[in-house]
Image (tube, rainbow, N blue to C red; front, side, top):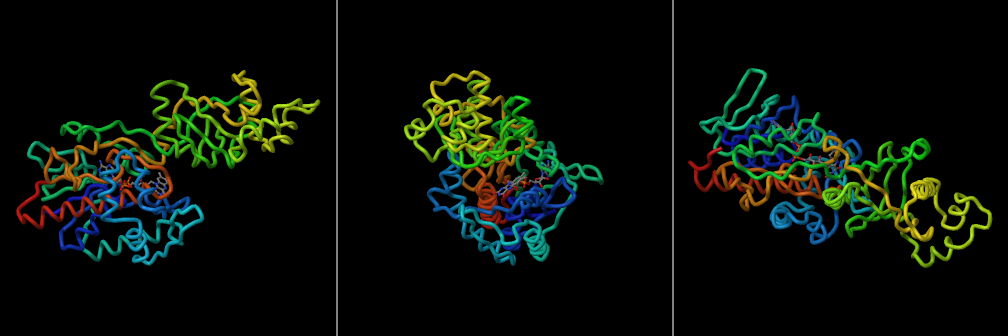
Amino acid sequence: MPDIAIIGAGPTGLIAAERLSARGHGVTVYDQMPSPGRKFLMAGRGGLNLTHSEPPDAFLRRYLPATPMMARALDGFPQHALTAWCEGLGQPVFTGSSGRVFPRAMKAAPLLRAWLRRLDDQGVRFAARHRWRGWDSAGALCFASPLGEVHATPRATLLALGGASWPRLGSDGGWVPALRDAGLRIAPLRASNCGVCVAWSEVFTARFEGTPLKRIALSVGGQAVRGEAMITRDGLEGGAVYALSGPIRAALDKAVPAVLHVDLRPDIGRAALAARTDGARQGRSLGNFLRQSANLPPVAIGLVQEALHASVAHETLSDLIKALPVAVTRTQPVARAISTAGGIETDELDEHLMLRRRPGVFAAGEMVNWDAPTGGYLLQACFSLGVLAAEGIARILETDPHGGAG
Ligand SMILES: Cc1cc2nc3c(=O)[nH]c(=O)nc-3n(C[C@H](O)[C@H](O)[C@H](O)COP(=O)(O)OP(=O)(O)OC[C@H]3O[C@@H](n4cnc5c(N)ncnc54)[C@H](O)[C@@H]3O)c2cc1C
């Protein structure tokens, strides 16, 4: 029987396995998938953004309101510790012009390969195709495996089961009922860092689906973000939209549709723009006029025309260009999101991430209720929380050799 059962072979579970096995503990990592780190590998598809180089205070603010927990986690395993760890596995990193940090190889596969070799060398055992289903009446962990039901009674358990996005990669949120039955409060799992749905006209999508909206600013609920977005068949995707996931969810909770305002020329003040766009068109078509006076690209002109066709209330053209209202009907479903907001409420965990209601059982990573934008904040949080939980487990097993109760 292992000293420690870690359930979930994502970055959270694997870094905890590394830390605990390095201290001489017997660790078994269970996962329902046939191989570890599937979402980590997917994260590397578009460039594995490991962390961000911004100063610690600004970095921590990305996790509002879960900052006390994140402050402890980042204190124990800050950004430079993660990049040093990556380099220690033979994968040098670089910082992009945006401050985002990537392995030079960009992909996750070489890093994961080297990491799994290290875990193997440290004696970590993997139990693949083991789906955790909860605890039995005697308190043992129950797994469904190809060989039937398996039970385990480790001295300590780490739950690192991830959120509910991209369920085909293994994290499907199926753990929620087992933990609710155990009396834990769990905030509903909701899509974060995801696109939004907008009912564009046929004419607009036929012409602009797949077109980027560059150098715009988006705002909702008093929060504004500069960046880019992409027109999709049924809405908007892209960094600026993802960064507003929380405020968009909050606005949709109050009213449907929620209004997202697009500033199509954030680099020019309203008065200066008005002087160029609010005079007579002198016989020019609207498209030509907007192109010449406001230097708008075709997709931005298309958005203004959409608003005019929908008879959106406005006084001047510059009003529309600076704050074009887009009616968001919903976010994309959680299965298509990059990450999940919601999860185990942070006050269910003690300062080492042990479940207050279940001594000896810890929880970390995306299954805990925190949220952050893309930019490396998600993986950094998972690694730092995994390390914090590992330290908590080591503390109870090493201070009380008979302690724990998985
Ligand atoms: C397309 C995409 C791109 C991304 N890119 C980035 C990026 O560049 N930078 C960044 O910071 N973040 C990125 N992320 C987010 C990041 O990958 C996740 O936040 C991170 O993987 C979460 O780690 P985790 O260990 O908590 O959970 P996961 O990586 O989801 O791992 C959880 C594991 O638990 C297993 N599991 C779940 N339920 C059970 C069960 N009942 N029994 C047994 N096993 C179970 C799953 O199979 C899985 O292996 C991206 C995500 C996606 C989808």
